[in-house]
Image 1 (cartoon, helix red, strand yellow):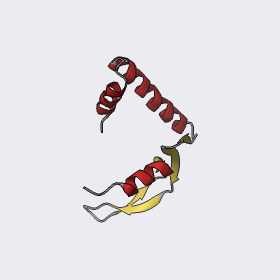
Image 2 (cartoon, one colour):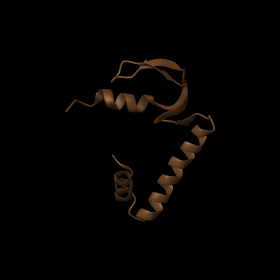
Image 3 (cartoon, one colour):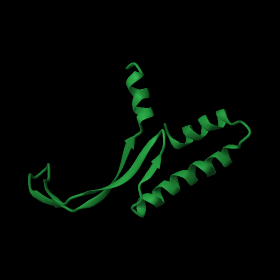
Image 4 (cartoon, one colour):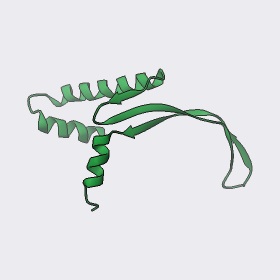
Length: 96
């Protein structure tokens, strides 16, 4: 699902809100999550899941073309852990 599809789905559920208003709210939520993660704060949304920033250590990798060893620097990566309710919904859902 893309952001525009998300906005469309929400507009179907809340017809009194304009798509512009919904887009403003969705962008606000996403920007707030991004800012919190940027500052190193975890974000927990009960019933949905939590977002955290994990630190990956520096390591030595290989260039797949040449086989040459390459130093990969340490970096921070976003991580999402789904909440219990989402996990339960996915377990109960039959595979299509």
